[in-house]
Length: 114
Image (cartoon, rainbow, N blue to C red; front, side, top):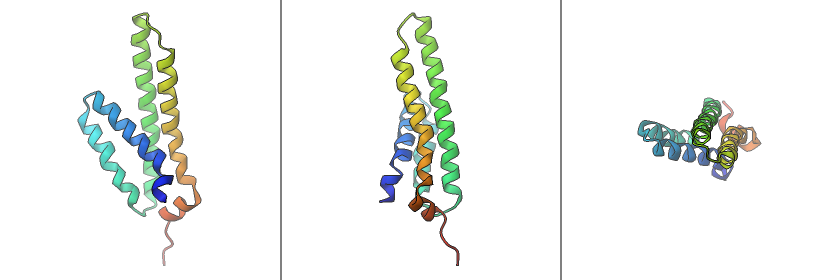
């Protein structure tokens, strides 16, 4: 059932990998997909790593929002819907890191040492 609690993180990384794939940045696609198996490790550093990466991912979405909106504005095309969608994706990505505050996930990533 931990996989369901981690679903926002997984979806965020899949969305980022699709974004990078569309931009032709295959090494970043491989990195995004290659990091997901780390979620299975019971290590203390895993949540912090993913929280940091999710913040970077949200910043990437905001960068893309700025770039795409600037192009649309320059072409005198509507850009509001684009801003709402990409802003929502950026917010979802940033907030996905909060799943690690769940009690069961905290216990999973901070196993008791004997």
